[in-house]
Amino acid sequence: MPYLQERDLKQSLLVVDALSRKCLELGGPLTRQMYNLFRDGLYRELINFEIDYSWKFTSDDFLYARQIQAFLQKQDFLELGYDKKGSALTTFRAAEEQCRETNIRLESNVPEWDVGSVLYTAQRKIVKILGDVPSLDSLDYSFGPGATTSTKSPVACLKVKLSSRLDCSINLIPRVGLLLEELAGLTYSHAVAETDETVSVPVSIVPGKLAFVPKTCKTDRTIVVEPSLNGLIQKGIGSFMKKRLKLAGVDLRDQTRNQNLARKGSVDGTLCTIDLSSASDTVSREIVWSLLPYDWACLLDECRSPVVTYNASAKVKIDFLLEKFSSMGNAYTFELESLIFFALTAATCDFLHVSTEDVSVYGDDIICPVEAYDLLEKVLTYCGFTLNAKKSFKEGPFRESCGADFFNGIDIRPFYLKTLISDRVLFSMHNWFVRHCEFELANVAKSFINPDIIITGPDGYGDGHLIGGFELYLMNRKLKRSGACGTTFDTYVLVPKRLKGRPWNYKTVPAYVAGRIPDDPLRYLEEAVEFDPDVVRGSVGYKKASIYTHAVSIFSGYSAYLQSELETQSRLLSVGD
Image (cartoon, rainbow, N blue to C red; front, side, top):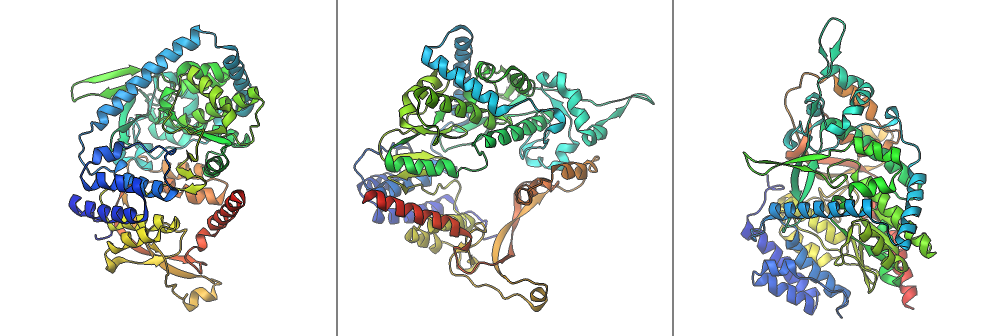
């Protein structure tokens, strides 16, 4: 399988070296310093190199220096001596201790008057945003894409989750009966007849499971695998909170507002970008009880896992009684932290009589006027959060938020290499460079692709083909007569991995799918993968597929973005004048 087949380590490093040498040609002294570290095999020094954007280098020099660093920062193929799981566990324990201290402080201490005023205003904002607690019959229940305590990740598909043991946390016991009433098909499939007139539904009471997922080449990230019934109701609550936040102007389905404001802040210096260390792991129990209405806090508390277990070894299990309210893995954590950070940020601006027009939050990515930075840091610290000084910017020409990095309004975001080189990786890399107008780097990436598998097409249809001049295939007479007026082009698509065989309650799948079809046709397309009951993570290969399109140029699917870029560059030029 040439498209998916990975090169070995030596060949992959040769590709990285060729790309780094091209960066060296295009960059400056900072780029040369980074390249020398790579050339000499000082990979740890390269990864740990901290760039200061107050240094007097050009935007190109910063861009290409960062690109050399990004080839290694998130990769998983070099053995550099980092204990990634141990580092993640240490961070988890530190966050728990931080939450413990926060819980004690919030229970016993009275904040300073300015912090207290901000917290009071934040409470009022949260009440308005959330509204009344939703009834269980109004929630949109669904499974997430990952594992549960009764379903392992390699087989985590819809039909297995519907067939697996029903689990819940100890906190969910008071509500589990009402929850099962709302999940009639699932409840019926698990019902066990006790007598001719009575049935029971067995539900196991289990803790969450501490697990690890990749983050960078230096450390993993800890998550908590939730019980299946907890996951269902958490997804429903998270979806409800997401809708309420959107009514308040916080759209958690769209990162472009944060990205555009980060660009603005890098140009005129009026906005700062704030990032927090281990944000989701430091949302303590008491900050939720302090800021949210009591009925909402009760609902969220009943649906969380208060205890998690960690398999330290085959014979040793460690149980943690969580000091945090919820962690990554809980399906409403992202919405909850976004709600808290938005309310605190907007309340800080209100206290200072600063406009909240440009306040924006996406998870722990916070953007606000620079006038609010110092007080907001004070408020966040009191609430138990740690501002990440290395990734927060209130001065200078650099801002970053939601995967967008801007230096004086210029996008200097690099391409991050995460795995060994394959043609599929090179396709993605080439297209990234083309979209960012780095055509020389794109050509270097293309030179390593097997020429026998190169196909091209327009942008906006994924990375299964190279963006570039392409050949459109004429429609046949039958399609033309049916009204089709477009053409087709070829692209590579992955063949999903499917489980063979059908569990005993496979008939519950149609009921689940019917209840999950969204009203918006576009959302239906986005969630279509959720409706395929046999698909699990991974693929079994690839195939060539024909895509129907009206595109007539390589950037037809990218025209709106290009128009936005042109308008932005025009504004930057006018500011410079």
